[in-house]
Every structure is written in C-alpha cells, then in structure tokens.
Image (cartoon, rainbow, N blue to C red; front, side, top):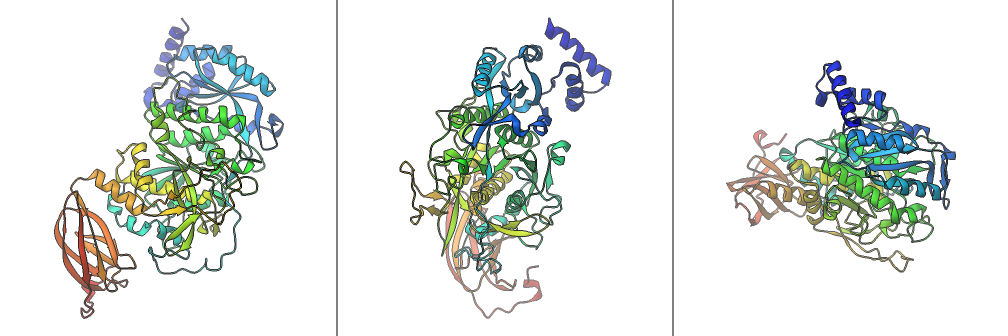
Length: 585
C-alpha cells in the first residue's frame, strides 16, 4: 500500500513540475527529500554531515584508530522498492543525514554510543531485508603518503632528455618513457581522472582550467594544499613550456578534498567512500588515492577495523558502482612504512590495499572477486640508482598487495600559490601509475577497467628491485621485485589491442638522430640510437632528424600487421645539408 501511495505522489510531483524525470534528477530528488526525507534517484549524493562531525564525536581506540560514536554506515539492498527503503529508515531509530545512492550508501545518526552498542545496533539493522551491510564509521589518523622534502644537489638542473640514463628534474618522466608515449597523441581521446586528496590550487598555471568538482558544495570545501597540487601536477600538468609536464595532458581532473576541514586530525573512511563514489558518478575512470593509514601503525599488525570492516565496505561499494554500469580503476599508494618509516605489509595501508579474495563482500550484486581485484592498483615507490637501475624506496611498503612500482623519489611537481617543489613518497608514485592507466584508457574508451589494469601491470621492461640497504625489521614481510610502469609500452599495447592492422618496428640509427618520421607520425629516438614504435602496416619512408630539426637522411621501412619487424641499423650521412623545408616546427 505504501509503495502505491508513493508512486502516486511521485507521479504527481513529476507532472506538477512539467519535467522529464531522467533529465531533472536533482529537482525530483530535492522534492523527494522534502516530502520523504530521502532521495528518489540513483545518482544522489549528500555529504553535508561531514561539516558537523566534531572532535568529541570521535572515540579513539588506540590513539591512532577509532570510530564515530553517533553514526552508522548502511549499504541498502538494491532490489528493494523505494517504499520499503523509506519504511526501513522510518523504523531505524535514527536520523538519516547523508547518502551516496550510486554506492547504495546511507549514513544514519544516533545518540552517542559505545563501540559495543554500535555493533549491537548494526546487528539489529542487518536483520532487515533492506540492509546488505551495516558497519560502524571507523576513523584513522590518515596521512598523505609522502616523506618530508629533502635538499637535492642536482634537482634544479634541467638536462636534455635521456631515457636510457634517467636523471635530473625529469628523471621520473624519462624512466617511464613518457615522451615516447606522447608520440601517439593522435590516438588519445579526452579522459576524466578522479583525485581524492588534500585540496587543489585552481589558479596554478599548470592546472588552470583542468580541475572541476562533483558539486558546488564540494568545490566550497576545497582548501589548496601542496600535496593535492603535487599529485594533480604529476598526472595532468599542462604541456605549456612551464616548470613541469604532466603525463596525461588529455584529461579533465575531477577532484575531492578529502580533509573535512583545516583542523580536523581524523579522517573517516566515509570521506573516502563519498569521495570515490562522487568522482565516479561524475565520470572519472581512473581514481587516485595518495593516502593511507600505515603510518599510524605501532607494529606490523592490522587492527580489528581493517580486518573485519574496511575490506567489506570498500569492496561492496565497488560492486555497487559496477552493477550500475560505472567502470573505473582505483589506484592507491602502497604507504610509507609504520610510524618510524619502517616498511610494513602494504595491506596495512587501509582503503583498497587490504582487499583480497578472502574478504571481498559483494552482497547481492553478483559481482565476482576478480572484477573487484581487477580494478585496484597498489603502487610502490621506486628510487633512481642511475644508468636505468631502480630500487624500492627505503620507506615503501611491500608484500603481495603491491601490483607495480613507479617513480616516487625526488619528484618535481606543483605546489600551492603557483609554485613548484620536490616531494618523495608512494604518494608521488601512485599518480604516475594513475596517469599511465589513463593514457591507456584514452586510447580505447571501450576497454574495461580490468583490461586497463592488465595492460598497465604487464607492459613493462624494468623493475624496482628489493632495496638491500633497508633493514626490513619485520620477519613476516614478503619481499619481491616490482615491475615499473612504462607509459610507452602500455600505450603501444593498447593500440595493438585496438587496431589489428598495426605492427611494431624496431632498429637502431648510428648518428645524431633525435627523432624519425614515418607515415606522418614523429617518433622519439632514444639517446643510444635505438627506436621502436607501433604504426599502420605498409611500406614507407622513414626520415631522420637531429635535435634541431635538421634532416639527416632516410630509409625504407616495412611494417607488417601483428608482427614485430627488426629494421636493423641505419648509419646517418653527415654530408646532407639542412634546408628550410627539412626543419620540423
């Protein structure tokens, strides 16, 4: 009967507004909230309650972890009707204060309770067929996964690009062959990238016009912070000839400042749930999380919260979004060790890092464990040891939860007030992997998140080795080398999987070659004269140019579809004079 009454009321509301419902969800949701206290659509997000969480609402369990004493997070069964959902909330004994309907997540506020009382309340709520998961709202003293800035004796030197021996300010871009990936810019489509981090400088010349927020309310919550700016710059700084070059320029950044305010010491998992679902609902495909809780660990052991609550909630949220047709990848930093900086198992970094096949919870959605795990990338930090050799940074967390490594040491990127600075940490490594995944997805928007992750994690040619100079103090650590992401190889694999008429050609040029043009496309030559690239099959002339754009010569090339062709060596004749027509602008 209740459902029939609601149906009549909503039909009246829609006809009264004279609007088509699917085009005006916000209007309908506002009216539904006014009448019933809950939204009607599947795209509504309300997070005002974050502004009302006070320090005395938080109960600390061990000084570093705790819970909110008056709130419960409830994930609602997607199969129930609007009327049954309304009936449940009316009988819950609490007040509904927030929701993210894309994730079927609702927050109920109660009077102040002990943790045991909250657990008992969750047990009672779970007896309802309307509820898939009811959990306490856990909090941690989250910290951005970075180390303090150091003084680097070479950092302000801008050297010529050298991908064979990365060094200087651009070493992190050289290490992942970013320039060679950019050679394929004609394949790139625009992509939306999510960042859930500390705040962002909207007026920074490297980021101006790049950043948006899922809502006007979230835009007002943005407090610029160097960490958020640094992460955003690594991913997508403009290619404008200024201080840095972002990896994925063909992007829009959809951002959420995850800090509740400037003074709050604690961060709730709810902030991450809402931030993630907000940017995904707004269109983000790859979402970066350069944060975690491993620095709050006094010893290498996970807390009750992480073992029993966090993985279930994060995996359920992901399955809820997937079931509604959203696709995405969550990229998270592996973490920077325990409170003393000693590497620990990366699964202790919270959020997505401690989801595994044994603790995944997908409820009634029918989403498999592989579909969840296939959309999470955990990233370790790599340090440059010179001559193309890399080791894991001394603080970088380890273990089987880590998927890949990326440059994270001495990374030059944006800071607040239009400035630049160096930072180190897994916070810097994660956005490198985020940007590479975004480039791959931009080649083919029809890829699934699992396909993109597989390409990113397997299209590599170097590793960050175990750091033998680190005294790993915990006996149960699983140490291993991690593949280093490579933008060029990942993009090329994406092209091959997208276009069966392409082939690969490689060879070497003896001389001062800097680039070669084949079939109208320019390809960067490595400093040792080697080259390799993907191109449309066929015969053509390869023209060779030096760093000044002067033509040095040319030779015939054949590209065979689906094959790798070795073009051998070509020796440049230095007697060919440059002419105006031979200069590349």
